[in-house]
Length: 80
Image (cartoon, rainbow, N blue to C red):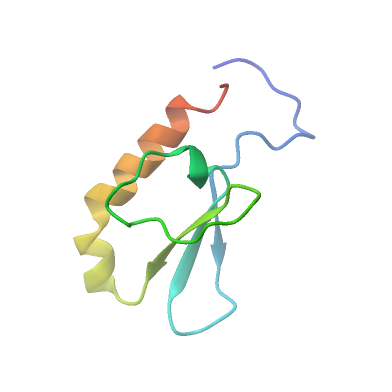
């Protein structure tokens, strides 16, 4: 992995959005670059964000493989 300017935040993959209490929202900053045909990532934001929503621990466990796939894809796309 190449060195990067810490002021550019290019390596931030995902942040938590805990504002609403109905579920946990993971916000993937580069989610639009990820090839996800399953519908796991939601939203169509102009800046490239995509969301993954989890309402329960059971749902997190059920979506574990898809979450891992998205993160792996994002890691390969970091410097591209």
